[in-house]
Length: 261
Image 1: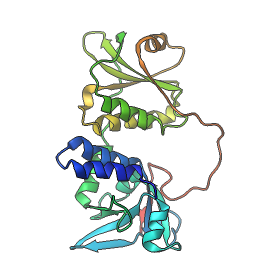
Image 2: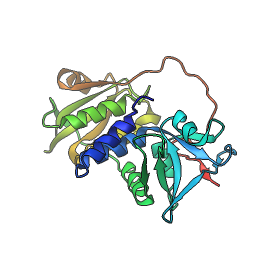
Image 3: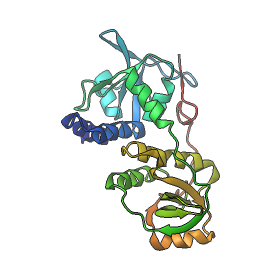
Image 4: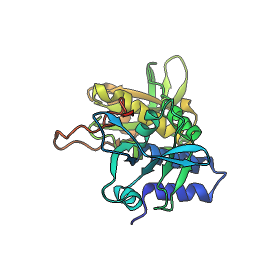
């Protein structure tokens, strides 16, 4: 089977045990990945009953980053549910359960204790600041590491249909203060919280101070957008071609993870 993003991030983390950036990148990939959670039986409504692996007195849920890997571990007939890594972490709040990732089927096999899952969950709840101060001038972005640019690009590549595009710029605010701004143009209102969260995660998992970047939302007719286009670094968000109704699966709502039985 081809190497997955989690395999790559895991290998980089293991090759540089003291490198915080590599460790953060692994957890970022895990949060963004679709994980296949092994179940005792098929889901019952929004309730799921995961299989539990016991190792040295600790308990772990069995998760895999490919359905084929889960089948390789448990067989083709095994029951499972597909959830994002962030949703799995949210679901385990208050539970003394870790995650056994890709056990026995991939080079990225690893046991993540409940403390690591709790850290990931808390990290994912950090929020970037939304800009409220009035912008005095818009400047080209300077001094931000390439890791952050890459992280923003990767995050927004999954934000299908949430905004027309985004621009990263330097800004000076009225009354003093300078910084950087990630400006979203024509974002749909219900997606704004998700976009703020994506920007925050890009900062956090790049190992950068949370105050290094603000987030703003602009209509395409706003005069500021013309300034953004002249000096900013552009990020294009994928757009929806058609809206299709799909069956609702447990965990498909990021704000309502499934319930453990």
